Image (tube, helix red, strand yellow):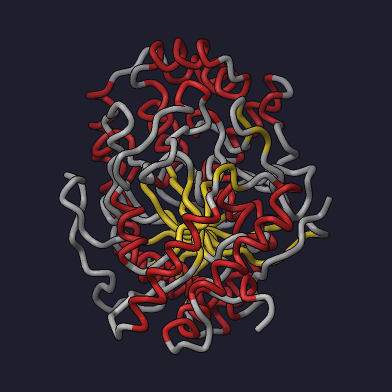
Length: 463
């Protein structure tokens, strides 16, 4: 069978479980695809073929013994370099961490192994995972396979680039302010930022920062089909005692009316016409699939939520973060921290958490009325690469456009980005948001949007 790397994870796992394809064959296909296209995009920055084949051999042996091998049996997946994978450096895009070798898997990595996945390689991110662009001084520059002149997104830019180019069927990413959703948007694939607490996480190799009630960073999947996001969410969200913020909530919640609030211009975002058209088109797809779509003039506050999320993310320990970035010398990290200084420093944690409680209640009330919100991912099409470092006006332009991504994690809500098509060769998509732990509603709406358009597929990189 040719081009196994083109299949969805769901299709491939079914073939492997039924012994029509071996995990070894799938791994070899994944490695061959990596060798063929990664030199053009630099999405995967660390991989060991012998290790990949050894993992696949274990899956094949388990199947031969008649053992259960999990929903991702033999499926090649990639892991972002900012989480622990035993025996590999947790660099987070930093020279300072090139020798920080993990002694154990992060829970999300362990859960993927338990589900039968084969870990194909480690994907790139910007230094400290700060930016919506992906380059650093240790691993270099990651390119967007659809157009090397636009960003692959960030901070999970390597993940988005890899899965769009057919390197792995599912990519692991992390998201604090769009770091899963924006690479999915920029690379023309789908990405899910789950609710805070849905997927367990813990990095033993790294000094801990408070990631629970303050920052709301979570792991999640990127993939070429919404169905693959669904099965990877189930795999990633298995419980692990190491994460004190893990919430053992069922993946399927009570039935809700198929109703969507569609907001074309949330909180003064003023998106470009192509983005407005994509959201309106997604609304039509949902209507055609039997959803009630109510166009609304505005949402609860995104702007204030985004401002405070930025303070929680970058203002907490700002001076220490800046000193670390100066020692690293990474231009992108320094541009990010220096560019946001006025808005995040000084920092008042008590005030931030008080406002978060109020704004979260407002969002909960809104999502009690409307099970799903449909809105832009960004105010613009994917940016020219490294636009944030061009000048002050460009930096401000980037941060304004990303308002819908920064705000949603502040309330701990799930956000799903669905790719809806291309403008020329530039991807565009939409964002779906639901109440906390209602990823099922996001996915149901996302499948309707996906079904109404052209499916996302792996591509050969444009050079």
